[in-house]
Image (cartoon, one colour):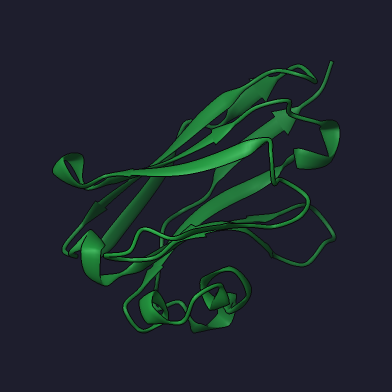
Length: 128
């Protein structure tokens, strides 16, 4: 199983970015995929996740209404559309996958330590 996150960059406050998480070696219908971020000096934060076959989605309060997670099974790719970005969104963003979390509801958002597979991070900087 491999995951590769991309799409980060520098954006002004109020702007948008779309992150991608290219996966290989897994069936997206059988895995929970989560997006996490970590800012300097802060703990890792689960911000969004999507469960396997049901495609249930979950969001942290800090991003609800601004971010959207989607999935394209044909491309084995997850996306995180980020709108109305704020300086507080500056962080390294990671995607992760785990098969056991897919049937545990919003645990995919909070159980970061249980994810088996992680991609490398992509830096998002929100600054004027």
